[in-house]
Length: 93
Image (cartoon, rainbow, N blue to C red; front, side, top):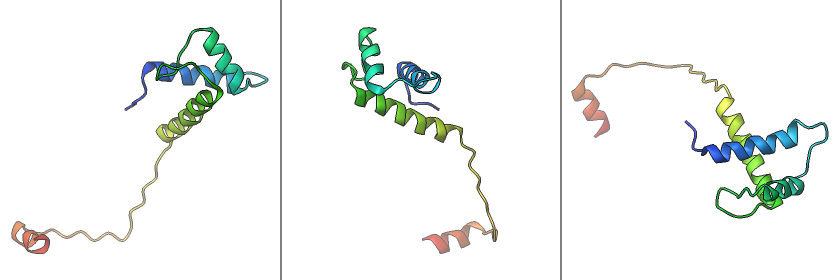
């Protein structure tokens, strides 16, 4: 169901903690400095910059909302016809 690697999940969760679970949220630049001091690299193998942190956080939030939303599908005015095979072929060929 998820195309994220465990490393990407780990990075998003760390960033989310810094941004949402602190009394005073930490900025993107400071988070990138923390990650670089810890020797972490981006999923593509680069050192972190504030734009990487912002992108991971933004896309992770979008993904989280998409995966946890409840879709509502309404179907109305439906007409059901049962066709035999020869009639179906005449209509669609």
